[in-house]
Amino acid sequence: MTARRVLIADDNLQIRMLVKAALRSLDCEIAEAVDGEQALEAAVTDPPDLLLLDVTMPKLDGFEVLAFLRKRPETASLKVVMLTTAGQKTDLQRGVELGCDDYVVKPFEPRALRETVERVLDS
Image 1 (cartoon, rainbow, N blue to C red):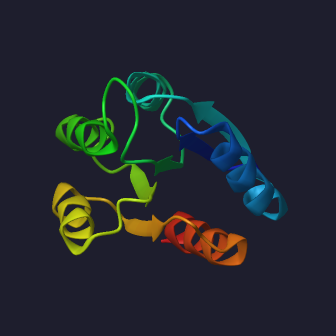
Image 2 (cartoon, helix red, strand yellow):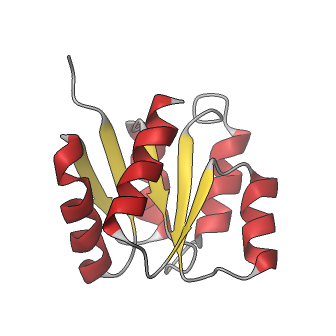
């Protein structure tokens, strides 16, 4: 069985490291992007099984990346979990309206993140 691929798009190295540590037990192949442009390019070029997408990133924010991905037929059904400090009700609502599959607010509990990733990957 091929390992499932997760793309972590976050401009904060420490967050990417925490996410990788939290997902280690899932035996996923992990790729990283440090800004919205890299995330978009990676998701379009070689779509992962799941994209963990920060909202506040340089070049393109996570909402812009998500909107673009949902408009393209080849990435429209890509599973996306927003992973961000933008946890206001309006932010959550915008993410849902744009088509994210779930929303995890930072700071996060590693177990809760892992459970969310597993649930979304298995859905």
